[in-house]
Length: 143
Image (tube, rainbow, N blue to C red; front, top):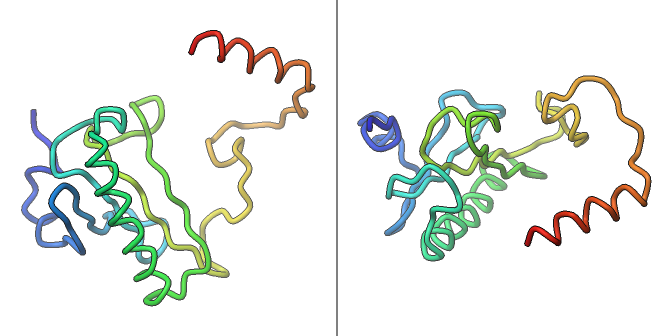
């Protein structure tokens, strides 16, 4: 299987920081300046396939990058996210964590509304407590 993260020599030249199990590089479609991707060196498609060591390695780089991006871009906030599967918006089938530094006045969404953020059109009334209890119970039963 061909993977741009694994095989593209340009990405290897753009690595900002790495450790034994993970590496970080700028995305070619940034939401804001400094938008980086943190990815495991081993090719895995989904977060659930990562070992606990790879998860810690990714988190170590995320922490280091957050500190650096606060200094370089005067970031006052961050979005950390990954997409899971094609229906979840994952375009590259190699796990990657988005690290998006946020500053006052940048072009991204600052007020998080899941329906807007996740591209759900229209509005929906607040769910009644009873409905939420029922949903929670159904999920608990599946665990």
